[in-house]
Length: 280
Image (cartoon, rainbow, N blue to C red; front, top):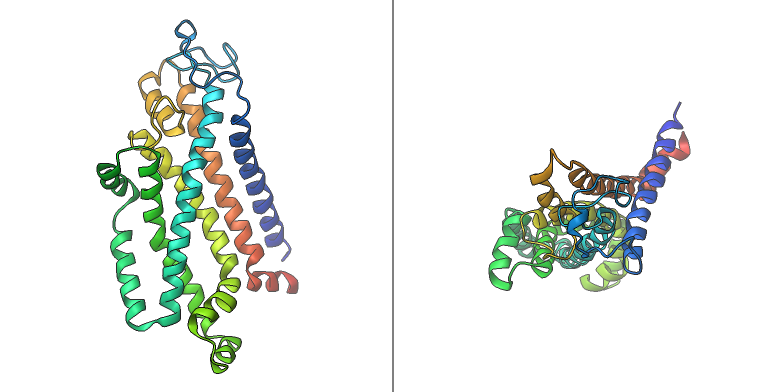
């Protein structure tokens, strides 16, 4: 009876890993091969249904939908990955410093995080777009800014727990400075939690990138984007519903895969849960 949670853990990790591998594999494959050129316009082949012209049909410009999906996967990851990693790097540094020095530094870092967190990614993209112009750079910066307070709070929370452990007290008694303790003792022990958070934020970043491209603030045409495909498809929902179903399903499966991967990694890397499984 108590082995069921372990099976569910394995299922989440395996299914999430498979879906995420398919996403990354499709994105990498699109760099060297797609069924058609994603930017090839064929007016005579416009709005063809699935299997009528290509595997997933064509859009209102006659472009191959399957090729657009494949290229859109790369464009989504090309924005989501650097945005999340940039936000994670800055947020981890802020959270680690807040946990190490506490006091005024902790209070300032958390209040600044509250202010930044109050601005959603879309609003941040509009403000950044006014400064640097709309496009991939604005989307990356907007998503990164949104992720900084998330990682700052997660890092601070788990780091504060590590700072209460006996080996940290021993390191402090030996005269180790806070920075060295953070780099050598704290960060290696919270890496698992940060990796899990990266996978979860990647799912949100892909969803946010699609929303920004839907609003015209992300990838510029004619470069394919799942969000822009949804935006273009809304005019032809009754005539060609496959134009919305294909990118919508791609976004849903990508987000689902990353969330399942994050849940599976969280349980696998959590020593408390591993201990429960061992006693089951």
